[in-house]
Length: 253
Image 1: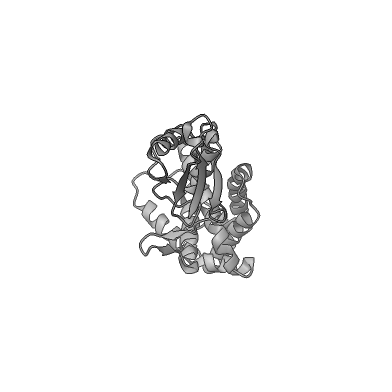
Image 2: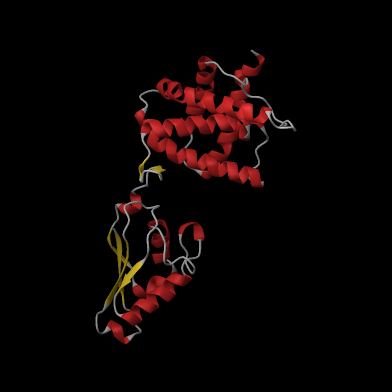
């Protein structure tokens, strides 16, 4: 639960009555969405709602059209917005929620993804990248580049939950190798049915041995282990992966 106490603005008669308003979200994680609950005198509730509609949430998004379904990452910056300052917002519950990231989620079962599920998802993602995203020039300003970069950010998030369960980099690479090779082979087979071949740089043979897949997986492990969740460093990660994979020379073996 995330809960803020708001005071009646000093310029209103409600201030003399010492009436407070409570704004809350019934959530356990900072990225979780929930209906916004505002409790207090009706007139004050409307004043708070109007002020929140002028505020900005996560990454500057306007709350004017999303007050019914927000997340803690929205509410925290909104409470610091100038429109909310007359209410002197005070966090009274849920400081831990603002620090707690929601783990990668299995929507089908309504539960956090298991380590095995994360292994399959990460390996399959890397196998897909080998066929498509990493085989072409990367420009984050393009539509395809922006979409791919969002995938990279998602993998970094998943990595923080998955990697601690792998004792060593070598164990991590071995775990990823099987789903990586399987997805890579499936995507290569799919491409073979296209009438127009995809213009790209081959980074791996169409069918990899376990040893080759492990070599490829080591590149991803080294790359994501060394990359913090920072925009500029993530931009450097993509061309780094491309260079490292090309240097393996797998297609020339």
